[in-house]
Length: 403
Image (cartoon, rainbow, N blue to C red):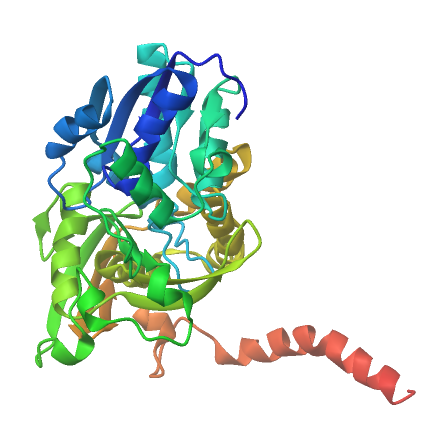
């Protein structure tokens, strides 16, 4: 960004090396006031010390916004209702957090009369796209400062040297084995030693799950109740959206549930290796599918499933606030109106196994599906069904034979 007429900036601030340097760099480069903002999305850290830390680094004001319940109810749950999975395995824990962080940042910018917003995402990653698409969808006129695309620094070592020169109080070393991003839904690890896709992740790295080998030798069975596509209780006890995810994270983590190691395709064009822990989300995905299996019409289910890859890509690429995502969300949610019921699951050494499902308005009818004698289904009628559906196949075969 080359426009120097900046008086006030709201920075998405984490308290780490990058954003600590950014506060000082913004003031030095633009001569502007910097407001630091941190979103509490359930990262499990004590965030109150960030206020003093940001002010020591040069911030004029600090916002710490508790967004956990909003994150769970208005972002994670809609995504789970759509069964969103990117490239078959990634449950989008990082991607779904970015639009909410950006939305609150823009609200603060508006309240403070700020000229610009800023973030610490690099020019190689997905997050720069996610943040900036959200900013511009909310306010097309907002000025965006992305230091990693503008400043002279090329490495973490450069940043550490800058902190020493400017007396910026940070705890950092040049040795960085990997980067971590954590929120209510998951923990992600990438970079550093993980950039070699052949290198196995260190067991000591994982923050929320035990290894399947170290999980209890006895399986745990739980029941999750759904209403209109949203989970509402565990074993009969009702929880708020955020508390329900936290509880399942604790249960799933104890049983080694939700670890994923993948090489994914970033929106900017390169491949990236990531390690993820999503214990609660993994359990909820399986439970939701189980309840859907007895409550969704076949064609509705198949049509919805055909759209999941597109929906997941929208989220991964940063289009949460796009008209196409909102349109598709309406379709997904329409399908969920009758998804009310309970799933029973067995958790054992990294595995989630559905062992039962029930629903007050179930489409599964034992008296029709039974292999025993029934008075509803006339098996002879299947012959005409098969012959009609085979007609085009028969015509194709006759053509090949020249008849």
